[in-house]
Amino acid sequence: MTAWSSEQLADVATLTPREFEAKYPGERSPSAVHIMRRRLRDQGVDVATSSIGRPPDPVVELPSLPEKPNESELWEAYDAMYDVKLKFDQSKALYDINIDVDTERPFGVVMMSDFHLGSSGVDTRQLREDIELINSCDHLKAYVGGDGIDNFVLTGLSNVHRDTAIVSIDLQFELFKNVIRSLLPSLLAVGTGNHDAWTKKVAGIDASLTALNDVPVLHTAEETYLTLLVGNQEYTIYRKHRPTRSSQFNDGHGIQHMWRFGERPFDVGVMEHHHTPFMGTFWAHGQLRWGIRTGSYKIRDSHAREWGFHHGVVGTPVLIFHPFRKTIVPIMGLAEAIDYLEAYS
Image (tube, rainbow, N blue to C red; front, side):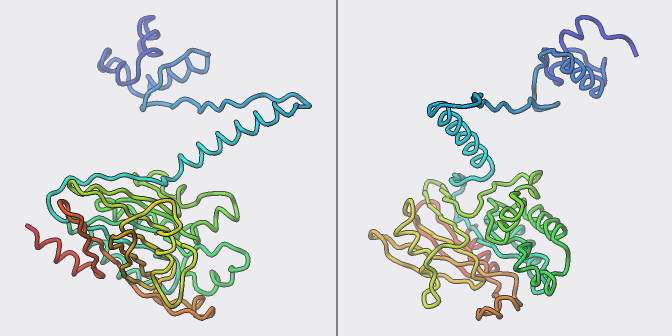
């Protein structure tokens, strides 16, 4: 291989790999360019960064503390650490998302959650059939909520994993990742639940986010406000995996409570976790609101039965939003919702 010219050595540091290839087409292989850039960087040369090649190391600016800091220095360091932690947490999950849908016809969002992959009680055949059905409709998208895997990692619940798990927890995450990839053509976002959070409680790792690290999807953690602009009509959806003040006598009470005491009003509130689907309305500030609860594909649940609850029920509530007037049509059932959506040709 011919030696690098002085001009090439200067340009390989100042140009991005794409720019270098455009200036010297075919003269250096991509690997040779990247190796030379790395060698120059190791020698202390300031090498141009780009999306191709090694990204720069993250810069974390923290104040240095003396051996015995005074009050001002101590709080300055604490505040700096707080800012770093806040930025880190905000970079992992989105609490507010805005999605614009350019359409002149009704647009549907199916709310799904509580797959509990890995449990012997999960109807995975129904789940895979539902994914195919969702992907078959161009006017329907999916929002996947929490508890994608069973993930009984807590020491006090290890017996549940022993008695009901079909596969190990690492394989549960692989299954969940496969499901999310299958839904990508129709996927709006992915959230988490209490079962997902157990890994973080035990090991400090957001396992769901790590598992989906290379999957292009919005990650919305345990709760989110979604502002959906359908045509020229705006809708607000609030989703929370496990709201407080749920009631055995009113399946939508947890959502009504979140509307009254939450951070902002919403048109539709969605709760998960309880494995039995529900749709209901309530009036708030003179407008009709919807309270939705998702079902679960974990239709046999010995752990829930032990605590006095019922088995799960598959439930995929679909919210259909109209683009030119504020109208929400909820339908419990994928096939029925798709029939409605396909009727608008």
